[in-house]
Length: 151
Image (cartoon, rainbow, N blue to C red; front, side, top):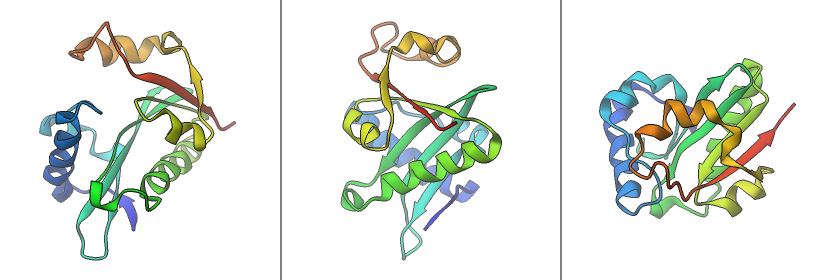
């Protein structure tokens, strides 16, 4: 089941993101950041009530939002959960009147299969100056930028 994240989910979300960050495939998020951006997040809850996936829709500007912190437990991958999480974020973006979504990722094929197109990272100066400057990889980002226009 895909649902909005709750306060009780934050510690599990952080652990999941930390595990992927340790592998170098996404950035870690502090508890403070997760609590303050909780409304950005959706989770996949399995039949036992365990949070097994998460994804965030983070508004960047009037016409632009980012898909970020997409993670699915290894044991639950290849079951369409990541796709469902992103689709939930796309639906929410449409309901908010936001029609351009981007992702910075190493999972280019996943996002291309969902209709995202490779673009130049320099298209997102708001992202660079709000978030990227705090990244340990800045300014040598090795992620790819992908954009989905849902207008």
